[in-house]
Length: 412
Image (cartoon, rainbow, N blue to C red):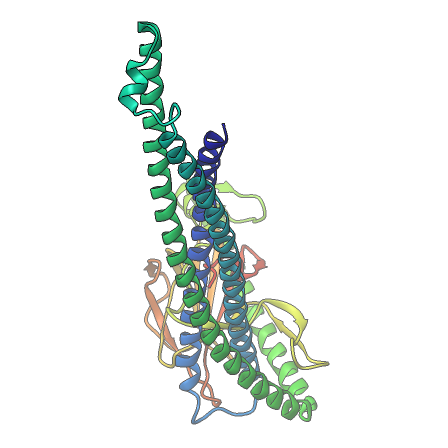
């Protein structure tokens, strides 16, 4: 009974380890994928920010970029810290399993030794042949042969279980060594990334201290940008209203079927309605208007994350990218308007049924009004400002309602 219990516990312990290992492996893979994604983002930061090293100035734009980089670096450090904790948990689990396997192996070997001893003392020292043929009758002879076979099979099975346990124990010890090596590697990586994070923190604090002494200048810059944003808003609203009037006029002239969708007064042909539905169905999946970049200023009104007393406001996203990068349409559509707005430079509006996307801060335009464009098709080239920063201003609208573009493009 004791031997059966030991074998049962061995198999239970062995089988229960597989789901746990699978779960741990999946988590490790997820962390590794997250780490690679963050490292890729940091490389983008480095490549973009190095472009302005010679011309960069102490400005709120530079602080915004550094703050975003700091946040991403901090995310990498947190990911590495979680990886270390996970490896520590794996090491503890493996050590416990090794301890359990060692106890099971010890019990199996002890049981096997007792079986060998009992076999040698079988029937008071008689040989196996004498034990069998000393049977009083045929029935006893049969039972003794059956008993000897079962006893022999049990010994073979016991020996096989000892061999399996020994092999499993050796594998777990190898796995433990690998986990410890992994931990050392990640700890070295984490230390290096923490040093980078501290350097960024010092640089960020230096910028904050400098800019804090220029609060009035910053407030004037924000006020001037707000006026420019209002002018941009008037332009895009006028363009959308013109599209609505044009659509209504065409609907009145034509006998073709048009529809009005909730939330907009724009009549649409079945083709335009289908395009709108397709655009809406790709929310959160649209490509970025530039191939590489990061959001230096988000949508909405909110306090600056590091500068006290400074409130940021934007009706779109400011996306920092490489100088001379191509700016591309995020979805199929038709160029509705091309204009120039003070502070925003060349601006292109693309219509997607009842939806509109706006691309500003361009130094050149590669499309014309009325032209059909495909997703990722180049519509212009980004401009570089006096501070050496190449930023695209990107907005999304549904009819006359402004929306947060970050909820429409893919996350990075």
